[in-house]
Image 1: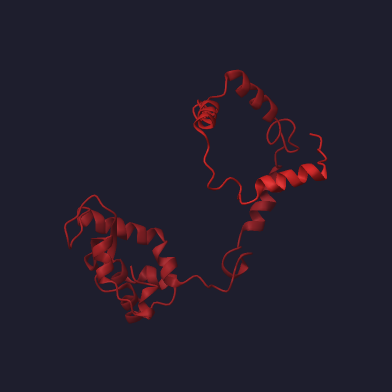
Image 2: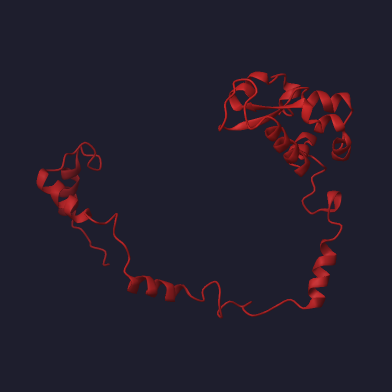
Length: 200
């Protein structure tokens, strides 16, 4: 599009016309203008692309990321390279892992994200028939609660590693757990800063 050069007189006329206006804020459109806008916008939100247009878009996109134009199309790793990659990844756990940051993941977080914890939680729900044991709600968001708090068990049994946690029978005892709805569970929480991070 060509850039139009405005004369100084034209610029002055525009300036005078815009005085006191802020990008049409507060300006009211006439009924005729409103009808024209309405007519122009009708059917836009519900408009669908024709099959011909869809086919054209599909054709133009083919081969851009996948397909024969991709430099890796049809290439496969050799058995030797697959073996090398496998060997390279072995042993990259703990301090040997590339993203290791000195073991900063809290123990409670490791325990709560483990499959053993998820199983314990499911067992509690099944035991209590998926019903809150305080208010009797069913079919709402439920949480599993340790009657003897999570933090207290870790402290009492001197659990300092994930391996110790897995071997601590008190932590996984389903008689020490109960199903609570979110509201009832919030009432049981101890807001002592030393317990907040590990409360369930």
